[in-house]
Length: 209
Image (cartoon, rainbow, N blue to C red):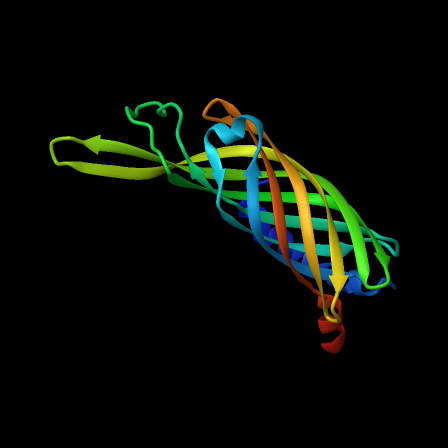
């Protein structure tokens, strides 16, 4: 799914919120904001190293059980050590910065036990990863850098733990992300781990009624 569709997708979710609010469950609607690291695994560790990352998303309760819809945007950052030059380039760039813009839409299930909650999810999506490129002008002694956009589809699954602090939940989440396209002729695989907060938007929306 292209990130260009994200505003439209989120608008549809907001329009559906009255039906969500009609459900009799304590976890009807949460926003999600997390920080952490995405750890490259397998071949991906040949060219990516982890840097600070963020993620944004929503948890929308489906029905009256623990099922929920989980759209999430992953903005992971990596140190990029290029192995082979891209076509039309003569140099490999080292210690550059690569950034992901990936949207995953998953189905999950949450089990609430007192103030704790445990959940798992699985889904798919897509987007792109920006990787830097560089050319050298030897006559002017200039290095010119630009970004290459690597489009790819992804599948992601994971699990998390939450702790309720009243109007929000603190959470720790770990997942596994697999890319269906290659970067540097190698498969993209990463293990994102994040901590953050999930404000309970259900309570806010109820106050606005």
